[in-house]
Image (cartoon, rainbow, N blue to C red; front, side, top):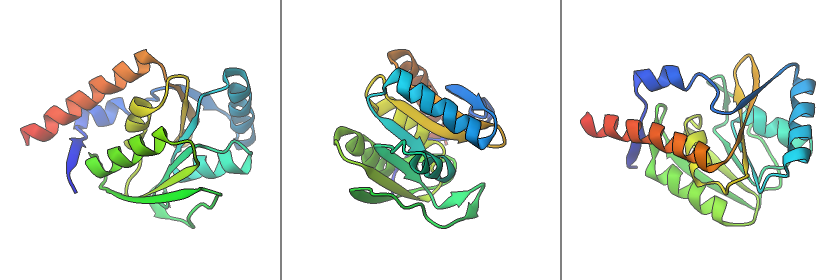
Length: 177
């Protein structure tokens, strides 16, 4: 397992802020607003990062092309989510890092046209960055914002540039260690 990127303390603080649009409200409100957004934007693909948001999307018939999960919610083990994924891929990705294995799995999954679930041994949070970087423009990457709601990231060239800059900082940090 090769680590490509490592989280820095400064980036940990920066990434606590949503990198997309925060949809606040009750569970029902956030799902309704997300459904409206999907109807309006007609994204090229929906990618979910996190167990709760993936489960909620599926239960509300907004099936992600790619669901990235780790079997945990707020670091507590949960029952794995189930949905009609045509393929399930297992990767290792320790907390605070992004591995080459996870990058390759996301990149390859987004090239296909089937529903895929990536199950992470470790932590999936930072993989949102890789999903945004490799998703087709006009895709929607959705992740949970603890105690606040869900975040919808519309993939644009500007958003890809923003994410690439964050990853560059993480890469330099890893190489400096």
